[in-house]
Image (tube, rainbow, N blue to C red; front, side, top):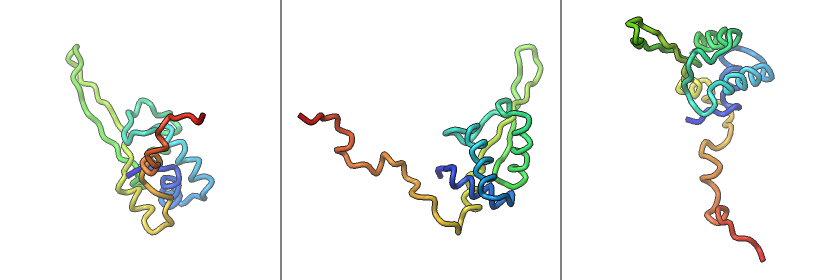
Length: 120
């Protein structure tokens, strides 16, 4: 599933009970961290935004996980991750008006759109 700004805005608005302008602002902040990925390392997250991430975790829109690795000096190092809960985001937006096709725009272009022929 593709998480668009519109889909995440609707999920955040519904789960956090905030108005659409605030939900869009929060969704934009979230997507700025994740980009095209669904998982990020916690070290990237600003302290203020981490509070938001915990709210979203409590609302079911984010998940957290961690792994432990052994350092060369024998000590353990724990690495924390945040992950978009794609299934819950989909559930939160089910029954709401669709936010458009989920297929990439480029897949819907005709083959001749990809030619580089110049008019003479």
